[in-house]
View (cartoon, rainbow, N blue to C red):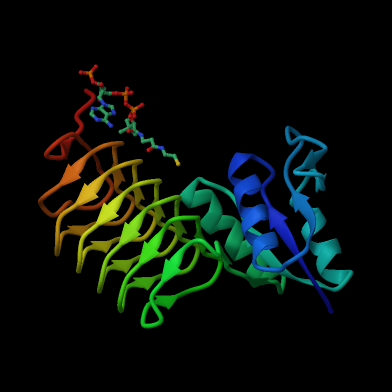
Length: 209
Ligand SMILES: CC(C)(COP(=O)(O)OP(=O)(O)OC[C@H]1O[C@@H](n2cnc3c(N)ncnc32)[C@H](O)[C@@H]1OP(=O)(O)O)[C@@H](O)C(=O)NCCC(=O)NCCS
């Protein structure tokens, strides 16, 4: 079995994730993109279809990181690679601070400057982006993206597939449902149900129609 990592994705987010993997001592063998992808990503050859995954598995690659920013797409691709027999690895910056009592799933990216505090729980496929803080006892669901410079106070819960936009703040004990979009710079001070977009200070439902 080969120990090198296959990165699924070949865009800007993939570049950051490749550098996280390299910083923790991993070697990235290939990126897997699509027909619109560049030929290389940070100097790593890009294979331009998901169809390459099965061949890579047969060649003995077993470790994959899904470096796709879209939460639903990342979640869907993860199912595909797990079914193909791959294992998801984490990509954690040496410049992040992760409490020893925090629990982490698989396929997670934690960028530079992020802080995960005591007994926080981060499920599979989350992105905790640059400089974001997730305080004690927070429970972050599967394939959530906490964008750069967000601050989640203690005991916050975020449902699967939700996206917390850049620079948002969430006050203690708030519950955010599944597939919620919190707009950039929002301050969330009350619970939010599933599948809605909220924006502003304080955050309110965005009604576009
Ligand atoms: C919330 C968001 C998803 C809405 O996007 P959208 O559906 O395309 O909405 P629109 O740009 O059409 O804006 C609709 C209205 O909401 C307002 N609005 C949009 N985002 C807002 C925000 N973050 N805060 C306050 N108001 C916002 C717009 O001004 C507009 O108001 P108007 O109708 O009075 O003109 C998007 O603006 C956003 O904040 N995305 C987060 C991006 C991010 O953090 N990326 C990080 C990547 S790492």
